[in-house]
Image (cartoon, rainbow, N blue to C red; front, side, top):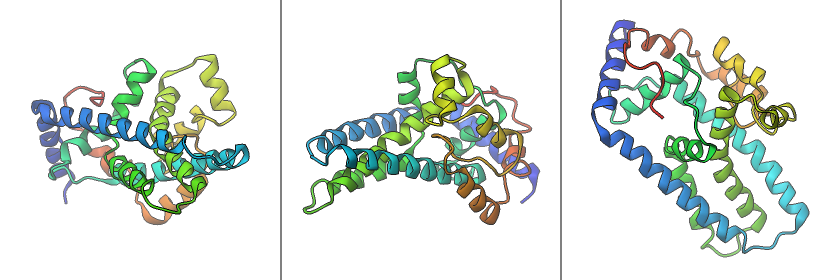
Length: 238
């Protein structure tokens, strides 16, 4: 398909996003649904007893798995150019982050809420975890790990925000010890092509880089070109 046609499809998708409030309301609905289920499964998990060291194992496992899963979703979305689908306006709006990486400055709780609204896949994940809590004989360590993944997937969005917007001493320290996404690590994603997709802490980027190199053609010469003729606001509507 020609670049010109893709650019026209992108512009049409963004016109729909800007003109129809349903897309923005849908994001709010996704945020409320995700956060409500996060609270629910966390309350169920906290009723379980696994011991201190198993909690640590759950957290470490969840930290790595979350980084990887969200990197995979990022890889998929960066390559997604299905602008004429029902989700096309949401896809087009997502790609604007490459055009203007910096977020609008906001309170971190607002960032958590707003960015959780972009994670449609998380609704289905959290619903599946909620069901597991009602099944017998499920390993409680597994339940804690799955719960932490569901929450850390939203925290990953806050980490991404801080990477782009914050120079606070606390954020920089957490980036330095790789609890949050380091700025230099993530800069590769915007300066190079088809690399550094993860955005919780970047720990699984070596694996993600291998997967991207094997299965993806990148974004610099594909979806990054689709918004070249877009004349609207530079920043994605978060």
